[in-house]
Amino acid sequence: MSAPLPTVVLFEDDGVAGLGPVVALRPAWEVRVGALNLRERVGLCSRVGSVVGDCRDLVSRGALLTAAAGDGPFLRLNARTSAPVEVIEQALRSVGEGEALVRDGVVVVAHGEPRSTREAPAELQLVDRPWDWIPLNDELLVADARTLGERGGIARRIHGVQFDKGS
Image 1 (cartoon, rainbow, N blue to C red):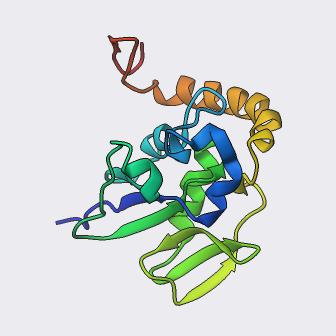
Image 2 (image 1 turned 30 degrees about the vertical axis):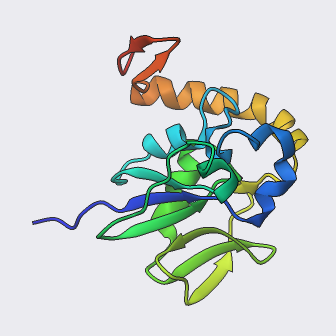
């Protein structure tokens, strides 16, 4: 029997406060940059089980759901991460048990509780302010279009209409 696929927990660190009003009523991973948000990008990664979020108290008290990793292996990904699906996928694969990828002392990706750290690749960016998303939008639109074309899209609801994967 093969090992279970890891759950990816999207977490908000203290740096999310710098994203101001953009994340006042939603988790940072739900902000759409390019064609996708971070939760959708992680969902397109291969070798990932479920994707759950753990958001700050202010948002969770506003009736948005939080979830835990539960049993089994889990990876944590900072909700301020902005990168193409392929870069996120590579980062999730490259981090070993008990290891974390960091940028300026901030955890970007971790596998379980980190006992060792190494520098995150430059392509795995952490957004500090809302205006940091503006130049990333053009870059990620192109990358997302390519990824969606190769992988067949994602199922989603837009304004109450269900779109199936690949539509």
